[in-house]
Image (tube, rainbow, N blue to C red; front, top):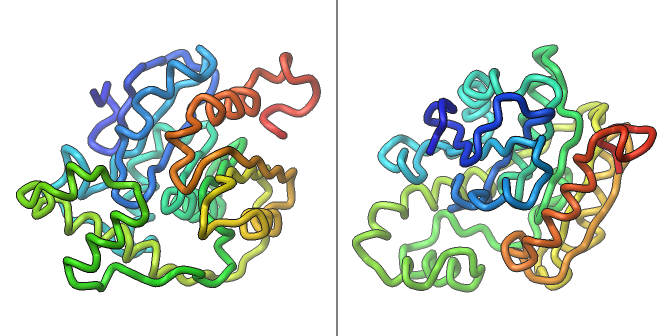
Length: 259
């Protein structure tokens, strides 16, 4: 259900009068469905806007972007109606990179900034890659690595017909993530909160804590039980923490949408 969000945005629980929009970006290989249940776990006055990128779900036959800088112009235009204050951005893994890059682009354009940037399951962008790159691997090796990462259901990986459809988008996602080159800029005037999984083998607390260098505002690190996909296995705890971050200013005391 897009609910007038166009092809780029899915709102499973449309809320035209929402106090705040939470714009969400999924991990490599994920789509808007990753956030389908989120409206039930967040405050009633927060509208969840889940981004559906080209090459995913109903857009599977569209060209998937392989470079974040190539994606940003189209993404910024598509989200213009949704990134009106007040709004916050959330991204997990590859989605954290996209949310960060979008925040930078909004600043460059003189557009309003998010009230909060929540980055999840990804080391700070200025840090070098600490895992093998996989987007270029032969199909058998690529699928084996996907099984190790654990984000793609085994039933999907075993379905050759479906995999022929989704594999180009999966490769594109990993290429977008793997090929990112960080360019130093001034820190963002936006509070940042980083989420991580205590058992994530590639994203450790030090790598998450380095996000603090990307903000002149408040920074907070929150760890959850689970591996890289704690986003799903610890969903109740993740949504409870997001609910705390996104509460009304009157409910939080001084400092709206800050840790």
